Structures are given as structure tokens and as C-alpha cells.
Image (cartoon, rainbow, N blue to C red; front, top):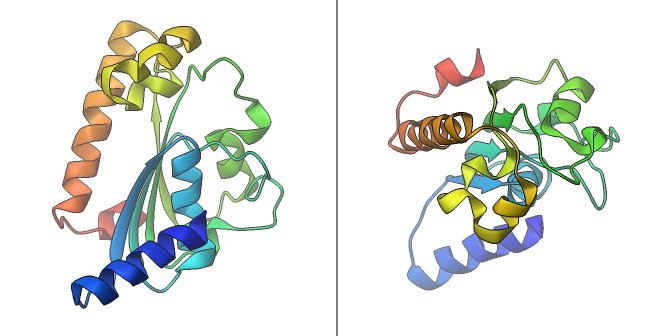
Length: 165
């Protein structure tokens, strides 16, 4: 899937005749893992910023197995995760496990207290979010609002130097 993302940007650039040298990616859950894969494997030189909201390293495990390292990315990485988790999400594939496997990576790690996996989605993730039921209402609401502000701040061009300290 990471190669598909690269190919989509290649096709868009070709057909729209837009010459962009870099792009940013925001993803949640498996999409957050794909964003990290694009930055560390598929399109290292063009990805500028990745905001990875609660990445889940499953099927196959890439980062927690040690096959890939966050340090391979040249992009500024911001990885946000919840503390409450979600039903069916193994600790071995959690964002915390990604961090623990590569603690020297140049990235910003943001931990949201009392928030669940679906806090980063609109409307709490709909039916899947209701089934997962993790985090408190206040924690989920706070995480959602703060993650949205984080994405806005990064995508409007605020300096990324502060993100990699």
C-alpha cells in the first residue's frame, strides 16, 4: 500500500502537471502505519512531514519486528497515541511498541491521556468506535481537538524544527 501512495502522487504530479518536490501525510490506525511506511520505505525523499495518529503495526509487523526503523525517514515524524488503547489492539503492535523498538528515532511522540484509539476520528469512529469503547468522553474529546490542532499547525507550514527535538 505504501507504494500505491507514492504512485498516486506520481500520477497526480504527471497528469495535473504540478511540480511539487515534497508532500505531507496524515494517517490514523493502519493508515498511520502506511504513512510511516511511505516515509521510511516507498518515497523517502519526497515525504516532508508525517503525522501518524495511533499507528497499529500489524500484518505484517514492520517497525516492532525491527525490519524497518523510523530513523530511516528523512521526514519530520510526529506520532501521537492514546493511553487507553482499544479492544483487539495488541500491546505488541501498539504505537508505544514502535517507540520502544526505536527509541533513538528523531521524532516527536505525543501521548494522550485517557483517550481511546477512535478518539482521532470524526464522530468517535461511528459503530466501530462504539464497539471499542475505550478512553473517557472527556479524554477522547480532548485528544480529538488537540490532534486536529496539531495537524493544522503542521500543515500550515509552522516550522518543523521544534517537532524533531
